[in-house]
Amino acid sequence: MQSHDKYRIALLSAYALALHGFEGILPTPIPWLRLGLANIITLTTLLLYGFRPAIMVTLIRVILASLFTGTFLGPAFILSLGGGVTSTLAMGLILSLMPELFGPVGLSLIGALFHNIAQLLLAYVIFIQRIEAILLISPIIILIGTLTGSVNGIISEILIKNLKNTEKHLEYKSNH
Amino acid sequence: MNSGLKGILNSTTIADRLLLFILILLSSSGVVFVKEILPKGRTVQIEADSLPVYRLPIDEEKTVSVKGPHGNTIVEIKNHKVRIIESPCPNKLCIQQGWIESGAVVCLPNRVVVIIGDIDSKDRKVVDAVT
Image (cartoon, rainbow over all chains, first blue to last red):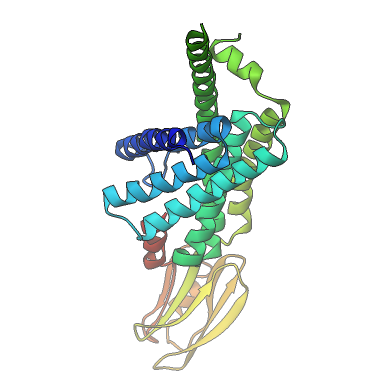
């Protein structure tokens, strides 16, 4: 890995961490509801720089955030790690199999869906073990995830467009 | 170059929109269906001499016999309702109470209490704490 990429991953992880922390202090009507803002950075990284940087940004974000909030290796950490890694894997897989099919919004929706599926499965296996309770909340969680996922996808799309413009501008400047 | 929200909407692929539509359709119909399919979460608890003897789901037809100081009280669960069909007590007030959908039937002489309640609060707490 070139040092250029290292700086990029460090910077993107810092952005993801900041968003992760920011949404943690936002008041939400339901305690377990999260907006998944950090997925904006994961998705942007995936689309601009590829799968490996994206999964690294996810791992760094999840581990550091849990260290900062003191939940490292705790139940919240396991849920966060499972959701983050699964959603990044799902988005990366879909993007490499069908690169033209989905835009940022579709990929964000896939990410949100797999994030929720992974967390629900983990919650079932590790904590609740009551399939009725999981079945009852699954559609609600997936519905909310779809709504927040599409908003995050739109934000990613705007971000990617602006970043591409800036890079083009910089290249133009350095070439002339 | 497109800009603004309209530009963003135009740049989504057909697959994006289809996926969004399918997800919203499936999850919102899931919200409705799961509630219909699952049991209402109500249980019938039968106590004899203030000790719980049975805990039964209200949506299952069943007739059970509970032993009290005077003899056996027979409780029937049917169509989400509960009643006492037979009791050895002298005044048979519990049988006269008939079918109940909520609340409780009490047979004081035979010390039998039939209560309809939600899934006990302990289980609820576990779900809330984790989710």
